[in-house]
Length: 280
Image 1 (cartoon, one colour):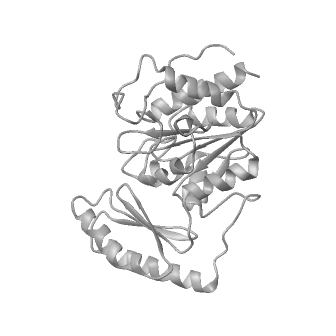
Image 2 (cartoon, one colour):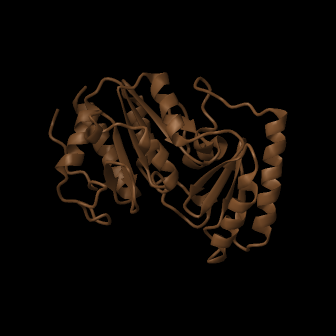
Image 3 (tube, rainbow, N blue to C red):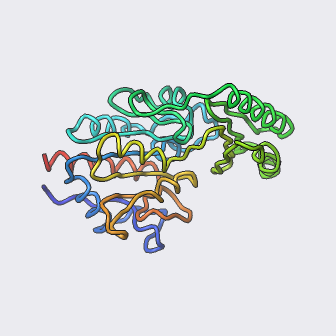
């Protein structure tokens, strides 16, 4: 295997300049090299803010050019499974990203899986509960211009990115209202509150995927607070394990590594593909 090119990003514990590419990052390079050398691996990533740059219109959140091609190439490599793990519903995730087989898609923070993994079928009571949640969130959004509701098969999300300062008030109303209903599970994100009628998390999703493919190690990249649950189930070098957890962008995190932005993600994925190809 040849020596890797420098990989952007640094540790998440303050050792690096979070907003700049590093000329040399031996620690991150070593982690990718060790991960690439394992027989069976799972490469999993959030979508918005990682594969696709954050934009004001969520319906125009398209992948950074080249990133999906690299993910498909990784998925075609022997011993590699690639999954997009998103808070979006699976149908929207697949439509925006263009993901198809062999890429795995997981939606609604682990509430929706591809066939062959696991699925959540709602009971009549859960469907009624979801309808109540949607109605109450819609009432809140209607009173705050710029707020929007995203309905999913097992949850609904209140988005306030375009609601200005009043967005915080709308989120607080949702926390004090529908989020308190028995059987509702709340997940906080950046300018969003998602309320689900089944318990799901990205951490749970990684556990399901790891077990299903028999992965020797998992690489996960995420930028949101919801991704912290995924990072928390991984065991990287600091914990004596082979996993690689990567926080994208600024902010507190339990991830062991950091990349600055989706461009840094694209660079690192290309490097991983080269390392995997060199070792096979």
